[in-house]
Amino acid sequence: MTMGSDLEVNAVKLRREMAERLARDGAVDDPRWLAAVEEVPRHRFVPGFYLSAGEHDEHGLTVWEPVTAELDHGRWLAAAYSDATLITQFDDQEPDWTAPRVRHGGAPTSSSTLPSLVLRMWADAELEEGHTVLEIGTGSGYSTALACERLGSADVTSIDVDPHRLAVAADALYGCGYTPTLAVADGLYGYWPEARFDRVVTACSFRSVPDSLIAQTRPGGKVLLTLSGWLYGYARVLLTVAEDGTAEGSLLPGTVSFMSVRAHSAPAFGNPAHWAAGLPEKGRPATYGPERISAASPEAFRLRFLAQCAVPGAQMTTVGRVVHLVDVVHGSAASLTPRDGGWEVREAGPVRLWERVEEVVDAFDSAGRPGPELFRLRVSRGEERLVHPRMPGLELPGRHFGSG
Image (cartoon, rainbow, N blue to C red):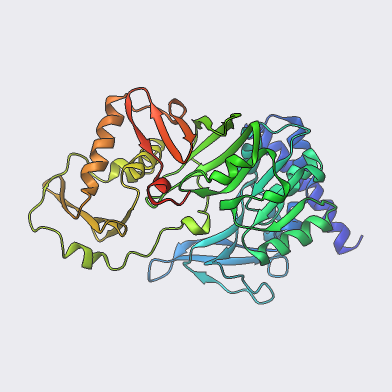
């Protein structure tokens, strides 16, 4: 048996085992999607990727190790069929996979999303045979292949803003016999030549719902997207589009995050010390500490999303023990410093950043700390409101700056 045939035999076995794990873990219960997992050769879509080495360098940067079949065939194949996100690009720069090197730090800008999340996305979009679908964010092409396997290539359109990433994905897709419509395009604007769609599904996050995605969806169709902001709070929503072009839907449960669409990425804010120099010397006791929105908990995860709706221009960073909030849009800043078992807050600028966050936390607590599914998002003629019966309506971050 040749090396190539050995690989394919092993890959078939690993695909079957991955499908069994996903079913056992409750990631998917639809046999049609499990059948797609058993058919699509994920290793063909990830010839090279990075995995965390599980350590940091002397500067505190994450160490990333390249993984290819040539470097370590066993590790590469096992990782390809693990339920893990595989990073394929950093800082918008394509690695040289003929001579890959260990990386220190960097911002991931493209990946092959973990299979359980891909399947969850397709299931949450309520995708069925006969639906036409627009996928925003082709990435490696693996999720596109799953959709083609389930629906048939003729009903799938997938776009990506990165021409090189799309070319690599196209080679893999066509090499596996899948022929979806592919195009280099910005997800903010969808893809008019193939509209209208029954479903639009985004594999990236947005600060607000792009008007074009609503306009390119048939009445009764659905848009599944992840919302984000510069505090890195996330929420997912499934919107149903009405005849009049409005859309409405509930937030979905869970803690899912995606890379931001590039036009909605956070801007550089400079040196926190420069912003702190303009703050008053004396502050006030903070009603809540930063852990209410920064802790590694599901509640903090969803509360951070609500907080960034109140301070859409804010970014947060920690230097030593001091937490800084910086708003480059309005020229506002705040700092939180540990003091006497609590926190002292100092604020300056036209927007009292932490005061607004505290108001949201107050309202959240008074409403009984509601889960995401109790919030509804309404999109109508350029206005987006997040509504809860016991909390004031909130606008999505991007709408404040006309970036939707």
